[in-house]
Image (cartoon, rainbow, N blue to C red):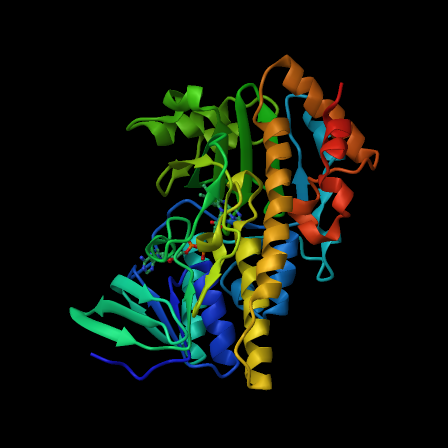
Length: 412
Ligand SMILES: Cc1cc2nc3c(=O)[nH]c(=O)nc-3n(C[C@H](O)[C@H](O)[C@H](O)COP(=O)(O)OP(=O)(O)OC[C@H]3O[C@@H](n4cnc5c(N)ncnc54)[C@H](O)[C@@H]3O)c2cc1C
């Protein structure tokens, strides 16, 4: 069956696809979204959006709907850690509201809920949304051909452009033969949603280390928390098997540096506990004739620093602006500014993730001392790449990402 040809077909309607579909449909483009799932499952990803991502949301006019859907804002990051007593960690809390003009902090909302809001907004703006689309295949070219099955029928489109937004295991990327660069897996990151922790302050998030465990806590609405833990491959069995959800809760319950550890120990899991290997993936040029990849499909940053949502929204803003400008000028879009900005953005975030891994997911007495030293140096204003993960990588000078800067930060 041949549908009326839209201007743009978007494959994958998660964070990047749903947001781009909304923005382009609002701007008057004919948009069709092809989403594999009929509803969004909890795949354990993307519940914390960095302050620079919140700024992107505001620029795209997508912030208010997420607030209305129950997003909470964390205003302080407390580095509870084996290196200090809780009161000292609290005195070192970072004010997240000072990092963007809206002064809101970081945004916390579940990944499935965010995807559902964007899907609803895209449909309301006039996009055609095909859920449960399967066997999607794309032939690139100046008039690309897209085929898929939907409701048991084969469907074809000939849009002007195809956007690949089908996530970190993108099948579109494989089909079109993009070369993906990746570095070695560094460690594991697993997460789970729990309920029953009403005492946790809703405006506080925590990123810390104790023993052989890097832990992160992000409040969600009501009495919910998203717990994340990062650990070495050698410790995999500690968080494996049929009782792994209880094991994660137990690991949090044992933390002596974290107030509320007992409250978390009494919480109840309400989602899966899935763990993933942490590393960066990138593509030198995520475009080919008639196709542009965005979000994780274009390459993902190591989730250890929680940048994927912000990256996806920056992609959406850049690509939508290029398409709008090209349309207004009656020209074909030139994606070079997006490709160049993304390459440098991902390079800087790759370096940031490597430094965060060295500081937070290397364990033992020397690693502990190095983390304390680096923390003091950053508090005293020494240049470091880590603030990129909060304020955005382009807002630091290029020297922040140089090997000598990192050496000065980490040296004994
Ligand atoms: C453990 C973990 C924790 C993370 N935590 C954070 C965090 O706290 N903060 C943060 O910013 N980022 C985090 N991330 C990264 C973040 O989740 C992703 O970067 C973000 O979701 C990327 O958005 P996306 O739209 O590209 O992909 P997704 O959100 O994954 O969306 C892809 C969509 O494509 C659909 N799809 C897939 N294949 C097909 C197909 N063949 N046909 C049609 N549709 C398809 C999927 O169903 C999905 O809806 C985390 C990632 C992991 C793994």
